[in-house]
Length: 363
Image 1 (tube, helix red, strand yellow):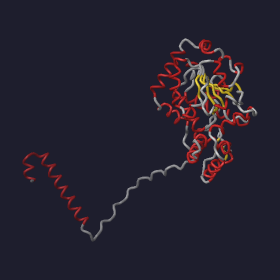
Image 2 (image 1 turned 120 degrees about the horizontal axis):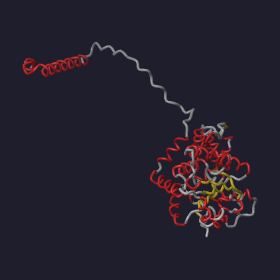
Image 3 (image 1 turned 180 degrees about the vertical axis):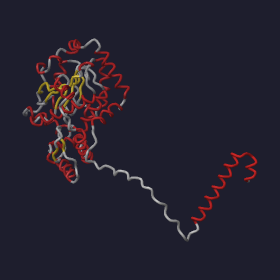
């Protein structure tokens, strides 16, 4: 039986509306946000001097003229912060800064090669409820190939931006995601999860990880701990093909042939060292901790060009000592003490270098 929480229970008996509108209804169903909260959030943002909204290609518009300033977009930020206006405001401000530090990302070189390949990231179908179905294929231990994790992270951000813009044009703001092809590099997955949670709120309708052998389902469920609890509740692990299709609300013919047949048939896609490579990927990710993921997040962001920089240090200039005061006794006392120390030091130095007789003569 499917484990459907309150966020997904409406899928059992979906409302009779247009397919592209059903996906939109899930946002309001998850956490109803009143118009007053949206208006309050907008009012707070309008009082601030915010960064402009930067698109994927580097062009910019004022934030209140951007796609992120619509009522639905502001509502998504409120839903992600459980209706807390102050936290949603901080999240929105950080999102604008993040876009200015990450974009533009040019679709060229390694990024273009990863996306044009079509094996790792692609849209494969439209579900019965109108949500686009996106496939992320980890290729059974050969996900990275000849490219780095940073290049893959940039490529998936380009893919997300293109699919988000396409979904908004089609009236499909949320997507269903299939995680296929074994375990991903955990540091890469952790960095991606942090980016999506903070900057693409409520864009995920549901996600299915398939196929997951029953013997490793507990480990796979534990690996979902890198996700936010609200996001993790939308992720389901599947071994059976029928339950997988029912959860996604798609037909088998809509999916690529590589996903057909269940685990016994899919295992024929393994290369001789696929299992060893996946085991090594899991061990490396578990022992590495959060440091590698944080390093990826730092590498993808560039410094803001318009942040106020600290003033340069002043050049060192030799300054003459102030003239001694004429009518005070304190400078005279200091000079006397300094002369006594100098005489004492000279005497000690002579005693050390001229022998005992010199020391007696000095004393």
